[in-house]
Image 1 (spheres, rainbow, N blue to C red):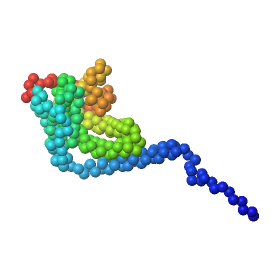
Image 2 (cartoon, rainbow, N blue to C red):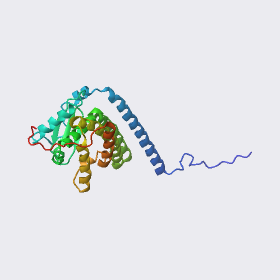
Image 3 (cartoon, rainbow, N blue to C red):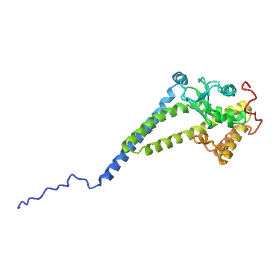
Image 4 (cartoon, rainbow, N blue to C red):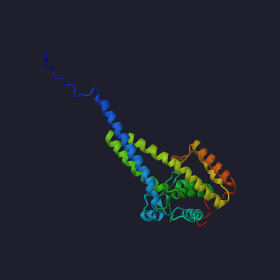
Length: 273
């Protein structure tokens, strides 16, 4: 057989796939791997959090106050603190030592933070018109502590923050990382809010013997949102008011709780009441 020399194939090690397609595939694979690791970390946090007692958490965060705009001279600060104590009394086995702070923020909101810290904004206190409604807001935040939502959220935020940083640095697109993080946190919080609602409503029923004003509070939220009153901060991380009314009405009916009753005025005549 006669040997016929051939010119070497210079494209033998050259991919026939466009470089941009290869880069995109590699990036998507990396993001998928990071997402899987993040999910595993979140699940690990869910397990580990069960072994951190509330007393230990209180010790870690006993002096932690993350907001610089707190005010100690709000005219109804004592009344809010007294109402919180009354609601906590219906949760006698809690290991938390709760602290209440009022934020000088005109936007209506309330939040539960690690260590037993509850922050209520002056804007929310200005919008509330019954003690029963405020009792539900405070009890709802106690529900977050009961379910350890606040400390879980802290761990989840850390894990997802790592994912956000990795995605942003690898893709050069900070908006992508932000959107994934924002949607994930909102997905967690909506489920937590519903569970906190159920716990909080039970405390309200124990205190007043009915849950009527709590549901009227949601009706007002729905009406005032449609009329343009700014409840964005509160509604942004809480379920839709109409859905809450339906769910909590069903819960009350299942437990045989009264749906209506006497509402106490807010604000009180004096801060000592």
